[in-house]
Length: 273
Image 1 (spheres, rainbow, N blue to C red):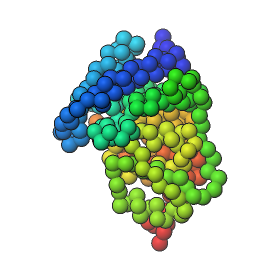
Image 2: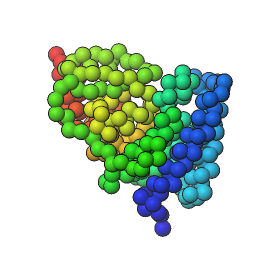
Image 3: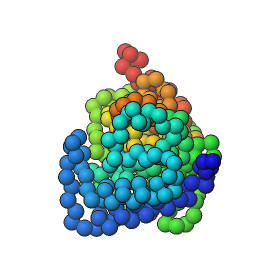
Image 4: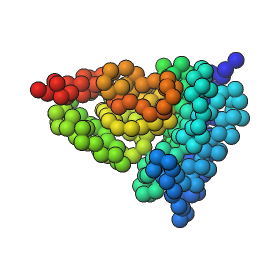
């Protein structure tokens, strides 16, 4: 019988923290980055974290398959039959890692029925871990001080606090934000953005541009556990996983209060004319 999600959580946090230590060992060296087929960078830190996570998850739950960014060549004919699986980004924000700004994470999510039901996002540089089980709660742990429950904040007043990607600018996003009304825009790297919304220090993270499923799933679990949502930008439907051959996500919005989605929807070009 599968372990309850709450029973898996402590082990998952430990795996992420150990992977973070592997990453930091490389971070402190004169490492090299090489380009993958999609021109994204790959370092020894990505590979070391991947190996540790894959081995530890296989030992923890030998009956649950693992899909990692660094072992993503699993055919759709195989994946389509999975009822549950681990979705892993061993090092999210490799560009941030290479630029040494500290804004990179380790992401692990458990997917069941195409939805993230458990997620952990760990920030190695600050030794901060966000975790969440939708329906049960979301937490932040920093520097071994114990878990603190977190939650989104209601959207009460302007300006709207918006997060954007540090590595990916977007003219369409800039145009939409011009119409959204008074707002602040802060650039943050990796899946940290989803966690910042989850803890209530930002309202909205719109992403118009390519992301992969392993980039978002763990942060989506944390944000939904904290009372927020991650939805397709066009339809407003919750983001789903392992529903197609490709790993790319649609454009999406992550928000704490549904009124943020309403405000975003009202900035659509047809609404502005």
